[in-house]
Length: 211
Image 1 (cartoon, rainbow, N blue to C red):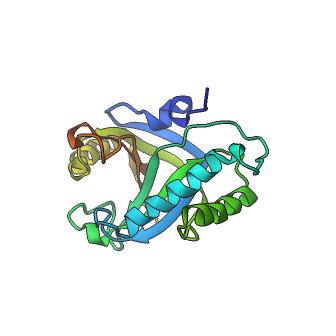
Image 2 (image 1 turned 90 degrees about the vertical axis):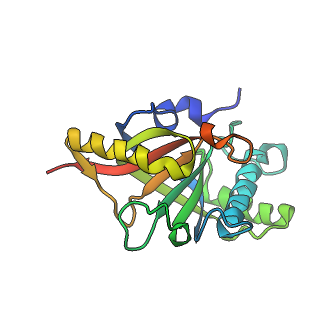
């Protein structure tokens, strides 16, 4: 059976719908950076997602071709994730989507090397006739975070974030947003096929112990 990150690491992909603090280890990702409204039709964000999946599936299916990746095992492509921020704002202003900066990512198995990644970018560009050069191999060590499962539309996230903030105040933590510690979302539902009321999104914020 193919390895599934969501099942193997339930503590990071399937949190409860109440806040909890976790220590998130380093992970490798395919990443594409950009700015702008993620809902813009054929905009930068949607183009970035196309690149991510092109590279992700090129790596996943590599064993069926001539590329033999050392240590390879079959796996399920992990869910789409995103790191979000806006210049000059702590947290996220959901009312101004045009001001979003983002790093859209898909997690990679640890056996994927730099050479494997570079091969996949070139191969995906050639096979999909899509310029994938914006893709980068990114390692993120999130460390101490608070997370929760959010149910419903993305625009309803502020109420869920408020629960997270209340939890931090009551338990001796505080948010720790920096230029490298960002609002993080993991998308467990296909927004194109699932009713928005049933969307499941992991929301994760960096925290530190309050002095």
